[in-house]
Amino acid sequence: MLVTVAELRAAINSGTFLQIFDEDADGAVADDDRNVAFVLERASAKVLSRLPPTYRSWAEIAARLPEHAPMLLKSAAIDFAYCLALDRHPEFGKTYGREEADARWKRAEAEMELVAKAIQRLIEVPEMPANVGGSARSGDPDDPTPRVKLFADGTGIF
Image (cartoon, rainbow, N blue to C red):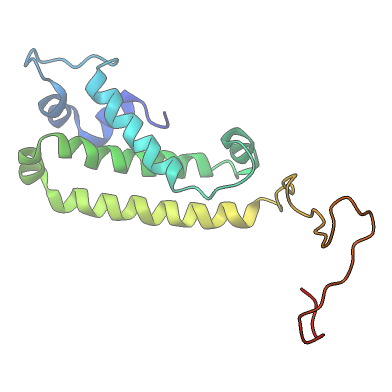
């Protein structure tokens, strides 16, 4: 996951964090709480799903990024997690500002769009897949010499 429980708690503030995630009303939320983990997993998935597809693993992409880029991913993940946390209890969204959550969501999407564009510019051309560049032949597949075929009127090659 891109964000820790402590980072989400700091982003939301501890009082709101407790009201959203304290299901048994005991005044505490454990760092391994499944509800918090689910929100953080969803936020991380939102971030990673917006990265451009490549032929490389995420670790290889991260190794090529400038050192500040992972913080941008974390920032977007925190904003997504904030919104997803408020979605758990819509009444808190009304109380604590749905407008702020909507603005955070838009900011996170804009950050991810910029990061995706930067990744597309930073990474060199990916290796060619094995299935690209094969030869196409016409005629009998057992005949080693391909033949040129023409249309019925004698023009063009297909």
